Image 1 (tube, rainbow, N blue to C red):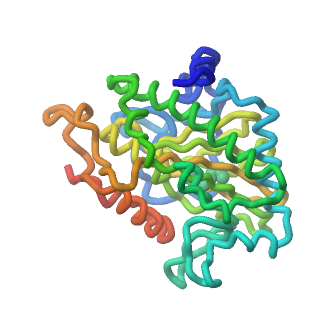
Image 2 (cartoon, rainbow, N blue to C red; image 1 turned 90 degrees about the vertical axis):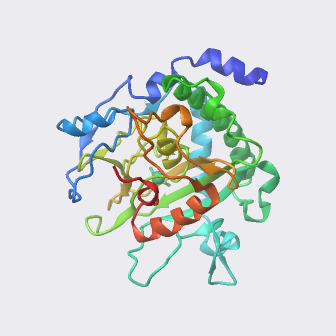
Amino acid sequence: MNGRLSRYHRSCKSLLPMCLGHQASTWSTSKTALPSPAPTCLSPSLSSTSAGCLPPPPPTTTAAVGHGIEPSFLSEVMKVTRGFYELPLEEKQKYSNLANGNEFKHEGYGNDMVVSEKQILDWCDRLYLLVEPESRRDHSLWPTQPPSFRDVLHEYTVRCREITSLVLARLARLLGLREGYFVDMFDEDATTYARFNYYPRCLRPEDVLGLKPHSDGSVITVVSVDDTVSGLQVLRQGVWYDVPVVPNALLINMGDGMEIMSNGLLKSPVHRVVTNAERERVSVVMFYALDPEKELEPAPEMVDDEKRPRQYAKMKIKDYLSGFYETFARGTRVIDTVKMSE
Ligand SMILES: O=C(O)CCC(=O)C(=O)O
Ligand SMILES: [Fe+2]
């Protein structure tokens, strides 16, 4: 651990409790349509599956403000994001995710993958970039405008990695595993993608979603949300809850990888983004995934044949991730394909 990280550890001992919702601000239920059928036990915070038997309590916020990143730097991250989206279209298209005008690539600027003509498109532009491992960055896709974009993204990557390692260490402890259990899994081939989302104003917000319901295919996700415009919602037992806007907070989200490795003890919440007619919105999302050549499965320590049988089948991470993009486009969840029947 480098000096900066250990200083960081000392300075934000309280990060995890905040991340896990002990420092709660109230989440409100959404007035928008309820989905059906209602799933059970989808939680944005830690919950045991027995919660499925209870009426749905409002989730508590996972917004962490004691994370150690200065508000001025978070504003800088948002500023370069807005700056990029304010560029003329032809400038942004220099980083297009369509090779030769029609071949979809994950990295770059544009829309998400389209797999069928019937697919309802999300009201969202995105710039998607691999940031780790550093050696695999494709700088031809990293915007040169605004001029500080690249430096800010590099610095943000370093800072978010520190926070993620700390959160992963605390999560391992919480699950009764040794602290380094998850952190050590993130070797030099583990991948991190940054996703810059831009949701324009939408004149028919009741008909169009910014981002359709999904859970993240990562192990863990760090989200920096627009601190003036809400829109992110989390599904819990059939009810959509608005995630409150907390200035300078980072939102820590469990991804499918963590749900699987914890054998279902930590849930990867279904979430979506709604649009609004008044204000555009941006967010910056960091997705932490393991080495694509590794396999994803419940940690043996989390499986107990009597008390907590294995709930997910093994799958190669690269297969999981490619299945993820496909199912995301179709509005289904790849995690459902590895769930074992009772
Ligand atoms: O825009 C947001 O607040 C969240 C975006 C999100 O869920 C994603 O990019 O996976
Ligand atoms: Fe997401």
